[in-house]
Amino acid sequence: MLTLLENISNNKYLSTFSKSIAAAGITAEFTGPEAYTVFAPSELAFSKLFNGELPELMQPDHREQMRALLNGHVVEGNYAYNDLVAGKKIVSVNGHILEIAFANGYITVNGATIQERDILSTNGILHSVGSLIY
Image 1 (tube, rainbow, N blue to C red):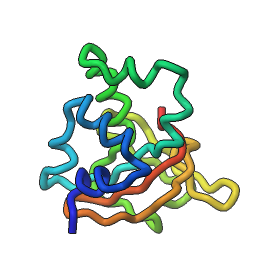
Image 2 (cartoon, rainbow, N blue to C red):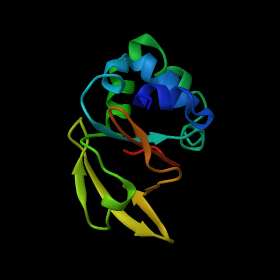
Image 3 (cartoon, rainbow, N blue to C red):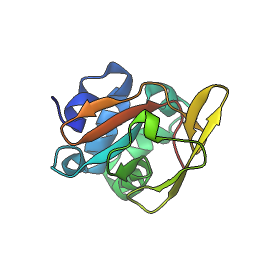
């Protein structure tokens, strides 16, 4: 079984997220022994940023901003898809409340639809989402 970072790096739909993790300097969160659930923004999610916003966020002088954005997609513990029920609220590692809802037949996290789900890793569970979570 692979780590969260390895699963992210090996998924072509999460390539921008993988690069963003490196730019934010938070690779240790995705390789360590602590269990995390990651709602990883897909290529579709990053494509919704304003033109030029992503290259700017990738710059070293925006590392803290990128770190804050990405940590809003990470929660401590393991949450499988079936654990994510409408009305449930969980807290991201940067302290934001993530509210689970059911909309149009899909589970959403703060309005971001879960696309790929339950990618099991040695240190957590990975789900991809189609929008950035703010």
